Amino acid sequence: MIAFIFPGQGSQKVGMGRALADAHPECRAVFAEADAALGEALSRTCFDGPEASLTLTENTQPAILAVSMAACRLLAARGLQPAFVAGHSLGEYSANVAAGTFAFADALRMVRRRGRYMQEAVPVGTGAMAAILGLDAETVAEACREAAQGEVVSPANLNGGGQVVIAGSSAAVARAGERAKALGARRVIPLAVSAPFHCALMQPAQDRLAPELRALAVADPRVPIVANVDGQPKHRAADAIEALVAQVSAPVRWEAVVRRLASEGVTTYVEVGPGTVLSGLVRKIQRDATVLGLEKPEDLAAFDALAVTRGGGATATPAEA
Image (cartoon, rainbow, N blue to C red):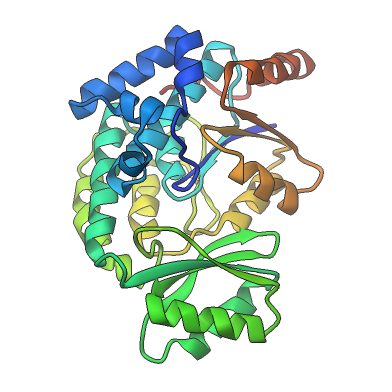
């Protein structure tokens, strides 16, 4: 059984999507749609940068969404269909587009605002994130509680494989990192991010985004979306939307997502979009899984073999970008 998994912020790089667009008309069409939806050349930002523009949160989020949907549409054209979809943070929007919950153009405009609201929720420099390696989630949570001192700091990404990302006020994150080291963390890595995502400091962004998400034109997803907030499959549009609302300030429970997919019988994971971050995490969580990615045209060969081996892998109606 196949699941499509979609990357989130941090997987961007200048040049992403260019090779797919050059080689495949389906992918070029996606970038043309993105440019039209936003009224600007998002494709140029993806292909040519500059990096400073691509890494602005309000540009990064629609850019990753567009690259992911270009790859998704190419896979659909080759007849490869998922039984489940999921995405890491921003990637959950890509998953919803792939499942048909809402339109690609609406998603682009929504994630642009999502990025802007997240950035505006916390002044630059006052929030931070850090990756804690080598501690379990409960011990990291304990470090956060002990280090808070009245400020916000909490687990933000429960990624599995001994990796937990924390987020909050800059000073509190620094204190929690030191406490995590004292509790046995192997490493504490400050992350180069512009805001402390998936913590209580994002509540103002959530409050702004919620009515806009709830106003979207939606349809029940054609395949279940396993949500970040609780690791549970969403079969109804309303539930998928509420999961997106809650995820702004709630932690991303990626390990729970993968374990739920595995419990449903998923054995093959396709990272649809830029980078290999999720592929690495899946390999640590479900060691016997088959993990593939699609970033460039030559990656398609692995999917041709998969289609032959699994009779096309068609376990659901076609994904739609």
